[in-house]
Image 1 (cartoon, one colour):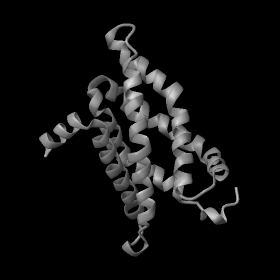
Image 2: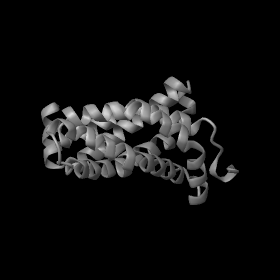
Image 3: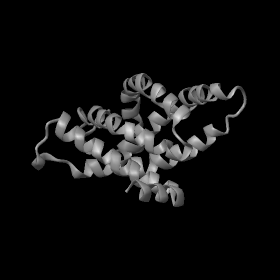
Length: 183
């Protein structure tokens, strides 16, 4: 199975990353619904899981795929410090906006209007971002030092299994239906 996956990653890296990311993200939402929110099978929201699959597989994975290639172009300075430079660029120039982008996309996938999606992002962004800087810099530093480029999106999405459970929980816990939203 591992060899097959490695062949798929070599032959079709983006598609493989997209499928893997969507699967992991969907699993994170299932964990959030059953283990954190304690939902019963009857109350399981399959559409919510599908939104997380689409978000991670169709939007996040392609963005991260390209972003990691951009970061790999940072080559000036001592080799041992390059991952630190990449991390700084990632955390300062990419992560804050990407967090906002993900939140807006998630709300729009839920059926919210663009203006309501932006309003919800403004409400939720700081709490999510401030938690993310406690998690992602250390993990990405490991990623940049030890994980091969073609596996970085998959590594991030594997770690994101837990992050997505958190994200799913905090973005869904107090959310009214889009047509009832009053931001």
